[in-house]
Amino acid sequence: MAGIRPRIPSTAYLILIGRLIVSAVFILAALPKIQDPAAFTTSVEGYRVVTGDLAVWVALALPWLELVAGFGLLIPQIRRGSALVIALLLIAFIILHASAWARGLDIRCGCFSAHESYKKPDYLWLIFRNLGLLTACGCVLIRDWQYPRQRSLREGASTS
Amino acid sequence: MLRELCIILLLTVIGIAYSLVGGLSPQPGAEPELQAGEIYLADAQTLNAIWVDARAIEEFEESHLPGALFFDESDWDTGLLELMNTWLMQPRPIVIYCGAEACDTSKRIAKRLRESLPDAEIYSLKGGSVSWQE
Image 1 (cartoon, rainbow over the protein chains, first blue to last red):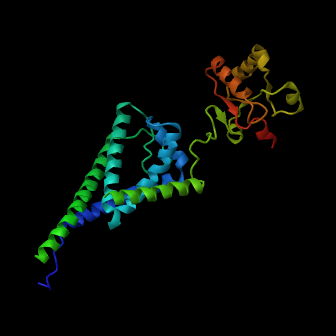
Image 2: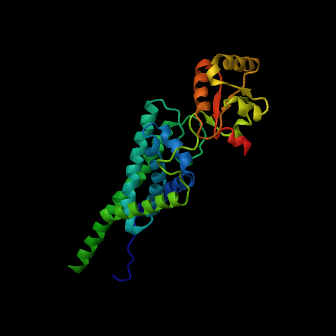
Image 3: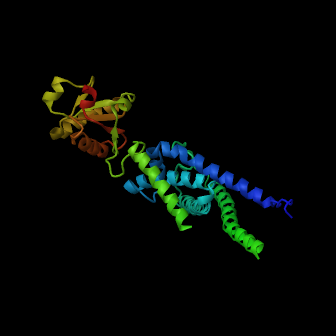
């Protein structure tokens, strides 16, 4: 049996691609906002959920959380935690966009740059995009949750 | 899982500290650089604005921006009439300045003028006359 290499299921490749895409999206989204938190504060205040100092703190912390979680998705030691953080962030973004859409707010998304144009955001596209990312992140999260269990089951089977 | 979340939180806090210490971010709680209705000299100079000098007459006579109108807050009607004449002939943004950063006269006049001239674009100059005397 020693010469038989374990077959990697095709879903593993899909999960890997999903992980890379979500990771890249979050890293690329975080970097411009880290460089210009003052401009991102304006985008945050545009949603009219937080204002003043709280908006400054959100604009300061959120890009770093996105960056750490984006890189964390590629680091086995913090992969599950990062996937969970990203999933929660995406749920929050979907709720925020839906809320802004319902209130008819004409705002800058603040998604990928602090200096986006003032053109009216396409809320439907934003929500679907985040739902897509959330699906990919959910698959990664489920896979990572199952993986240690599968490994421990394999180890248990090999010792018995 | 808790350990992973703690690591993520710690790295995020380090990032926030880097932004704060490195001067990338404005300090939360700090006064915003430009308050509502204020304008920087460099921006105001691009507007072809009507300049309104809200300092004391002695200071105005000593020096003022070319073409600036003297506006005595205590003689409101005269100042408003002169300003309205200028503005109605050629509607332009109005920029009011007083003595220094800390003076409040320009902001107060700007606020009252916005009520009298609701169609006008009215600003108070950030830094006051000090900004163009430097």
